[in-house]
Image (cartoon, rainbow, N blue to C red; front, top):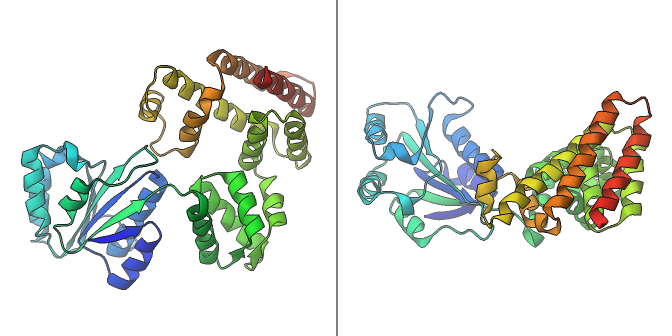
Length: 343
């Protein structure tokens, strides 16, 4: 069994072609989806009419077995994805049947099994690796959240793929602005590559494009807010307004951040895991913003978060109805939020 990650999967597909079996697993839903997309694209080209999705439930009712055998009678290439697969919870009978089928995958079938975990320390179990390794043409793809040196290397690889480089200070600034949000990082690198004329991205370019993005600017402001840096918060707010960032766009990002914190705090009050927040409030699996909120929410009492959300509701109403200039209203209410946070 080959051991790959969300970067080396691309090289493997080009060098070795498409294998018969992939187990794509990890802690980042975006990277899992991207790895699956790369495999499907390599197998089927741009079309997706021969791409089928299943859940583990279909492995026990005969549907998967039927389709598996039907592939050998068809000439066209097919790709079948089994989502949210956990071999440890599969009934023994179904596990034995599937294990037998995996040793004889038809040449015109590619099987992908995916498993997402919200535990950042997640690693595939030995039982799962042993189960999938019985197929000689197989690979496990680890699509894990990046941090530290690994995150920096990841950003450098994205920049290289866009035809440019990024210096160390620019890289540090980008990780400060975007955190570990890989989707946001990739989006920013695409814009920065053009700004740098596909040469080298500098710190000044990151700052220049960063303050013009409502989401990045606001999250940088929220980071200062959490540290109690009121003057810094107000200066950043002023910069965004000077750059004509829409007031309602700023409020939307701030409100979303505090709603995430509130939802996470309610669940952590009951000593429940992150998965409970996702299920109870209908968040998407792998949403990095809610996992960050889950980590940070204990800094705030529930009553304090309710006070801040009340200020934000009042702010939005005033922006939509008051004749007072938006800048005045926004600065006043943001100062109230700073006071509420530090109280």
